[in-house]
Image 1: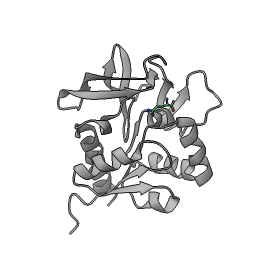
Image 2: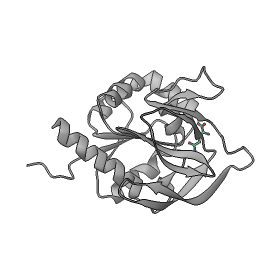
Image 3: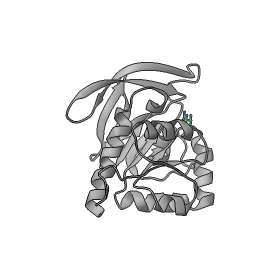
Length: 203
Ligand code: GLN
């Protein structure tokens, strides 16, 4: 019999702050796997797209063929969580940048560096909708995007100053901020729960 906890969470490790996500997953007591190749991707039950530079990560995704493979897994129902640059990569549209490729998995439009370049980074406690309860989470924003448009199947989980900064669409989750840089494990725990349900459904 497989353990309930027998899921592996992958973290895309091509560029950006993947180390902090790996540590956060490990703090939840779960195996975390760096994903750099198609073979790595096959071995995970959920995937985190970290913060970093979305243009660079996008190029590396195309070069490795991971772009199409992640898109396929996303369409097949595997949970994917994007933070910051990862949110940009999940989006359908990037405002003002039609030429920048994305994975186009979520029905959202985002604006890059949307809180203004003069404010490189800031932190705030913001209410986050976990379904059963709304709980404040400490949010670290670093040259963060926000969501400018959401489709009908997209749930808004959190706003900061009236801007949408966390969304969920079925198996897809995205935050403009970085919970992996705080002590809060709740959002990663939510991804783990989604991964367990996905694994239970697909055997
Ligand atoms: N500004 C970056 C981008 O647009 C994202 C920043 C981040 O991931 N911390 O790609």
